[in-house]
Amino acid sequence: MAPMILFPAIDLKEGRCVRLVQGDMSKATVFSDSPADQAAVFERQGFEWLHIVDLDGAFAGRPMNAAAVEAVLARVSVPVQLGGGIRDMRTIEGWLAKGVRRVIIGTAAVRDPALVVEAARNHPGRIAVGIDAKDGRVAVDGWAQSSSITAEELGKRFEDVGVAAIIYTDIARDGVLTGLNIPMTLALARAVQIPVIASGGLASLADIERLTAPDCAGLAGAITGRALYDGRIDPVEALALLRGERPAATLATGPRERRA
Image (cartoon, rainbow, N blue to C red; front, side, top):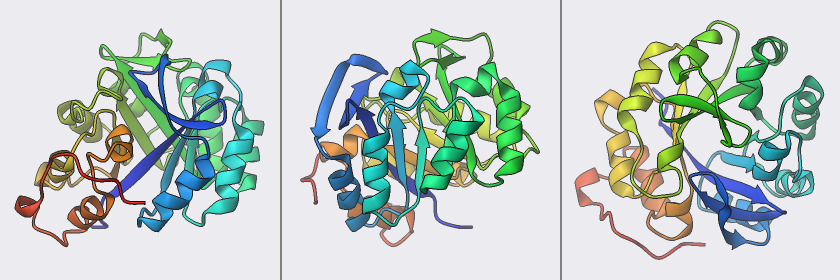
């Protein structure tokens, strides 16, 4: 089985790289004025994928940080998965043509599931579904609204249509460094055949170690944001741990210096 992929997150607000707390746009911490520079740092640190979200686009329903995304694509060679404001076929195909490896469909997966089916069949392996859960229900419009559908119900809608992955985020944990919601993530992974990527709350190397446990073997990856930016997770050690190159028991789990 291939090693689990650790995706560093680049969340875009007004052209800058930020992190939010539970999706609240009023609680944005700016970590870089140059998302492209930040992407280059992540590439040098050894990350094999980047996870980018156009936060403004998620609220507006259309791309709002295209220039920043395009600058990242021009700067790095590692594959990029992109979400936020992607709600029609024109936008999907536009991003794929510009070099995005995988497009993430979130709100439209709830409101227009036929779009996901069509996109996945036309572009196999290049469409992911973003499932962001709040109080057990899928949230939409940049997490501003809750729907009536559960994560498992939504995931099952897209079995056997060629969806590459589901990115599952526990909104209550996102940006607050309380650890991934492993039980809910595993429940979703067991309910569907689509590979699941965990997101929301990853806080330390202890959380990385948890992902190496046998019950997490079916997960395709995890996304890390704030903990990586503020030095709680050392990227070299985290990646080595996921590759099985270092014994988990030897790793410290407290804050560390950032490595650029």
